[in-house]
Amino acid sequence: MELTVVQALLIALFVAAVQSRGLGYATLTMRFSPMMTGLVVGIVMGRVPEAMVITAGIQLVYMGVIAPGGSMPSEPAVATAIAVPVALLAKMEPYEAIAIAIPVGLLGGYLYQFRFFLNTFIIRLTDKYAEDLNDKGLWFSIMGLPILVSFALYVPVMYLALYYGAPFIAEFTAANASSQIFHVLSVVGGGLAAVGIALSIHVIGKKEYIVFFILAFFLAYVLKPLGVTMITYAVLGGVLAFIYVLVTRLSRD
Image: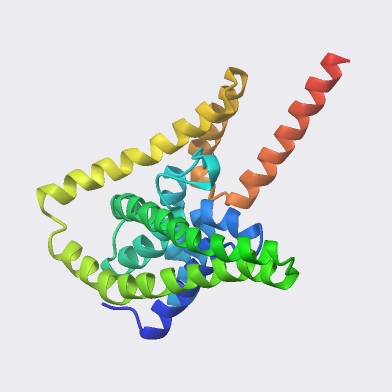
């Protein structure tokens, strides 16, 4: 019940790349969405289907979460990178993994703030390059150094957390799964997914859209015995959205 050195290192490198925004604006989306991190973890561990099922539950918690000024109270990428391996190693249910992801994500938020603190030391160098009109120096201090700082911070922290922490948490969880405290955490974790959906409804903020949420729930319940895939639901949702927009525009005209 453990991760290999290579597996822990690959996941740590991915998280560092996402948190550094070294891959451009796409990394910002990856940071806010646990699904991509869960996919990478699943590929690295060779258990993509199980990883995506667990990640879907974590994704529900972070639906509707915004990042004012780029700062979030919890870091979805960090939370997923730790919670999914723990859940896979301990054979946990998705709602149980949520109970692991939330506190880890909160700690990840403090780590992200510490990264901002480290970047303040780079500003002096940036000011110097600006005074000297050094274009290459400015690029290096604005783009290159923050990425290097992010990798220097996240790679060792995430590697140690994954290689040593994840197996320990998995073994401890598996050994105490029947205890009262873990039962409470599981119940709370299951409820947090509903909170995420409620946040999404609140962010959308239009009462006339509530009917679509009700329709989606009804269809999912009715069509469940038929084994309808998520792709079918996505296509159906897209068609309904197109019809709604079309009818709305025609009524305005």
